[in-house]
Length: 397
Image 1: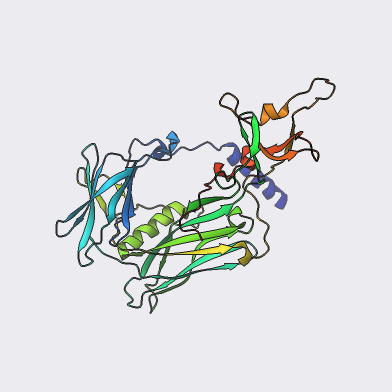
Image 2 (image 1 turned 45 degrees about the vertical axis):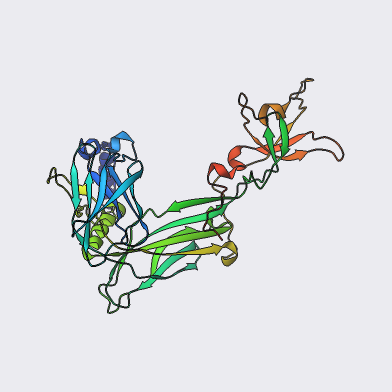
């Protein structure tokens, strides 16, 4: 009997698998395009930055759809207005810090180039208390970073964090040489450094926490991010800048709902998708959904640096792997040929009509003799500026 049940189960599984058909939800090709508003009205001395875009269909393959040519302004409950200027496609910025009066309420107005108008609700100023500290721990998997904060007045309760991380990295090989046309010369490491670069990235998840159920407004050891022990980020020196936002209860609910819908779906145990209700509305068409929540308040920030000397003896893995040094000779004789082939001219010389495929690294020569050729590798294994910048950030120390 058991054998028959097992056979029946296999037949059912085979039938189900064979009957699978691709399912393309109608929303993938929906004609609707909803307004998306991202940002916070900063009430302090830091610039206010608001990004405005529209949703795109998954079927188009387009990642971004910025709204350009719109008119944005911060408005107070006393009819004061603070215009924002478009500084890049879809990004609108205040001229400086708005330095708003914390006793009043504020909102954001938007008028798009096709004369559609949008307005957020008037909200009170929610200033963030200082970030107390950022600390880290290590385990067998890598580095774990945490934030700590508290409000002695017990007024904040709801928090959100974002971060930007920056790190030093190096390519597989350090080049002491460079090609200038049909000449190989020594590289100037001051003006033409391609071995030491900096790279940055921003947080891609929604980081929230609340002390609403605690007797004191204290957030301790709040997880920010984890970095694998093999990550290139930890190879030399790493820095993280954490920005903390104070939220109202409504704003916290919005971000919590957004987090559930974007990060916590995929298994039967996760939250079910739900409508994300923000505080921005269309005046032109009240039935039109608008995605976003505008908060007002001053933020607090803190930066720390971590060197690889502070970490266990981890072996990091370069992002570009399988790099190798090749040999390029002025006179290379292919097997069976008596005619020399100039590999240096073919692969390393660099001119407008003949771009080099490789970068020279070291000279190959006998003592007291001109170079016979050079070792070299592909640009990705030598030139760090292909993945970062060789200009040291102003905040670096």
